[in-house]
Length: 268
Length: 366
Image (cartoon, rainbow over all chains, first blue to last red; front, side, top):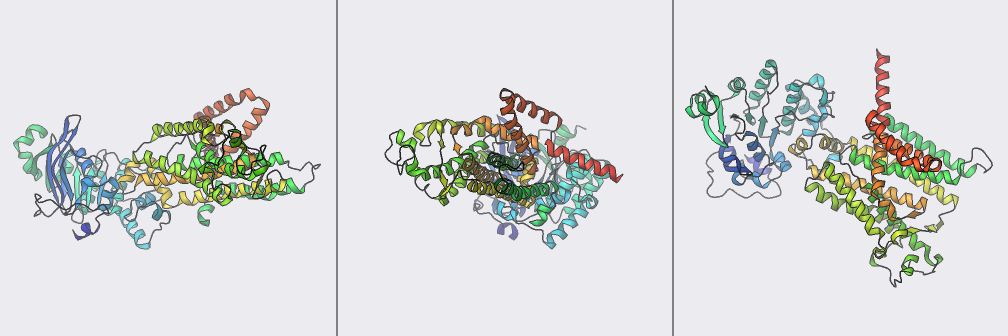
């Protein structure tokens, strides 16, 4: 927590207001978030807390607001009302996308998005935490420690042999891993991962599950996923979204037994 | 820095050629007697110098288009502004040698019955000030324009159209007599620069060599930038802008500074152009000019820097040839060339040659 407070940006974040439940020692606080697009409520008074080091899965039918929620957290979409806090002192709603990224929130897109013309190594180096201003990056060099960290992550995501290849020639699964690797280089406290195993083979899915589980604890991880088998293999706690708000929360077995969830989503 | 230039094959060929030109042209032009078949005429030297300024301009466009994905259809405006800035200095240098012999006012102001020098003409009696303006005028315009456009996340074809509108608006403004830039006729009849006669072969050679130096310097500078991490960031912005943003890069600043730098390089090219060609008028702002620059880069091959140089030389040599031999055919030829390159050489001449060389290397390896 101290680290988060220390990183607060120049646009001094406002302090928590009186009504906020500061007793919850959560990494991410979303409260009463409402987002409307032309009258359609993508998020409807959504309230969600993610704890430090937690691995959380978010499930829900199409249009439940999963991606919109990620857009709000990362600054891409501004909600009509509600509050979003990262740690206890960073107000996400007053920050731009790069500021939020610098504050320690990393995001993996649904469609793997890597820099296809750059090599695997360059992709990781671009993602590396540090000063990202124009002037600094004109003269930036890789320090030995940074190089070590890069190689460590390269090994973790299984792309050591592909380090010199252009990212554009990687397979779909490898691109997904590279993007996760880029998130790790960013060294975020919170990782938002949108459908990480879509289009992966069973072996790739299994390795991705191992990778995400190994990240939890050190980082908070929020995974949006449709694949129930995958969710079962990684999640300790599951949140079900429906029509822009939380329908149920608990272990996968609990929510699968929940009558409302069965009705709207699982359809069993 | 040496390492960065050395790892670039095409760039080494380009710089090598440039050094050869710098060594050979003065000898052929100044030392060879006129009667010798090896003599290079002053006309050819100026023509080469003009091509070089075009090559610089093309490189400036390649920096933002090829590497940053910003298709500017208004770079002619920055080129012209640089040209006007040095033109104002050259006009002030004419002094009493003008038709009306006014020591302070250029001829066109006397003709318009103006009594005082407009405020924005002050300072242009000084060469260093004019050179500063060569960079500042296009740079400031690019800064303001880019700040507004990139902050509002205007990109793609919309941005291209606005840049086109920018140069068109400037053309209309500079055509007006009351703007104080000579209206329709612009500036011409320059006499000397820093006290040296602009018509003297020695002065012309120095200007030519300065242009070659500026061209080489522009290449090395751009090359250093694009091989730095900042250069990889701008290419990343080109390929996946939102990814770069979510990694914590302030994408709009990267675009802005590349755009400003590119505009200043275009301004320098314009200044070197005007000192050698001896005239600047509002037609340099015409939208067609700016589109032509983009065609040079496309034909040469974007995203390599030296490809832009190749394109600028190829197209302008062809233009010089066609407009002399078959003047009415030039625009058709240019259009056909552009269509041909877009359809059959999407990576330009340089990209095609590089791909063929790689294929041959692979074949010989097998």
